[in-house]
Amino acid sequence: MGSCAAYAASSRGARALLLEQFDLLHHRGSSHGESRTIRATYPQAHYPPMVRLSRRLWEEAQADAGYRVLTPTPHLDLGPRDDPEFRAAIGNGGAAVVAGGGAEPSSWPWAGVFRVPEGWAAASSELGGVMKATKAVAMFQALAVKKGAVVRDRMEVIDIARRGEGSILVRTASGEEFHGAKCIVTVGAWTSKLVKSVVGMDLPVQPVHTLICHWKVKPGHKGELTTEAGFPTFASYGDPYIYSTPSMEFPGLIKIAKHGGPPCDPDSRDWSTGAADLAEPVARWIDTVMPGHVDTAGGPVIRQSCMYSMTPDEDYVVDFLGGEFGKDVIVGAGFSGHGFKNGPAVGRILAEMAMDGESRSAVEAGVDLEPLRIDRFVDNPKGNLKNPGDQGRQ
Figure (tube, rainbow, N blue to C red):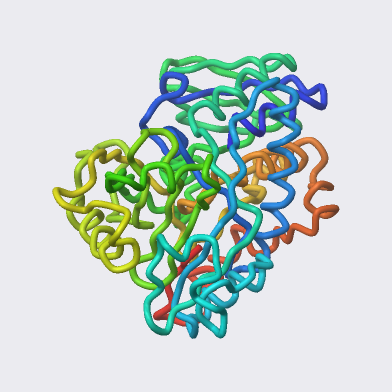
């Protein structure tokens, strides 16, 4: 998000400084690795307009860079027909039911791959795709530098303070100080710690450990599950919530993983917490829904640790910090395992909020930022969730 914001700001002529806590393109946060998905099928109506804006901005950035980091694909959603989140997602995303719910089960493109359970449905939509995550971060950083931004790594920010009207001071752990008119905070899993130390606010952004699993495609089917063959990204609603990208980064393997994981401290991770709990439900799902095409014997071939930064309602935080900082410090956080696709849109919105005090792009694209405000947690610690037993799911 920070790299996208730096690119958006510098593209408008702002003098932008991007401070990275670790080495550039590190693996200690949430934006590394080979792949992320993009889709417009969301239960919450405020996300599809943001996804469509972001999809356009991905294309603009790739044209500016001269190379691609996003491979378009179809997208498939599966889930119980009576699941309200599944029904809302396919409705908001304009997906068409292709199996279950009265659709002829043998007439859809991937009928030979997926065994849709009794009482379930499958819905297909055109807006899908796979982003090369680390390559995309590098692209936005390079574009920001091309536009005049300065990028510094190994710069852990430990304090933000106001120094007079229109002046924000940022201090780093190395003792360096930087001054600017505005400050955009996009520190991922470290958001709660930094915000607490700066303003004393308990912003409910909880880091969790999650596991990216790559499974072996069974012999004779390797070519079927690739982007070249038109295989979709997909998501499966219910418990567990499963997501996947086509076989792409590792030939003969397909990424299928479970959303979420156990809480963790980003400064003291053991990199293996909950590994079995995160892999075994995926194996059971594969054996039920894709038994003829993916091999679960022996577990996933590749396991990669990652982190989510979760809010209670799994909605983003995109807002002014307020208080003594007014509109001079803007926070982008809590992307809850579904933010990467919207990086270009969120970066543009954050930059406009910093430079203009509001986001014209959000208004023009019909993106509602009200559900992403910090004050939603004031009277309800679970934010946009209305009932005590509800859980967020994006």
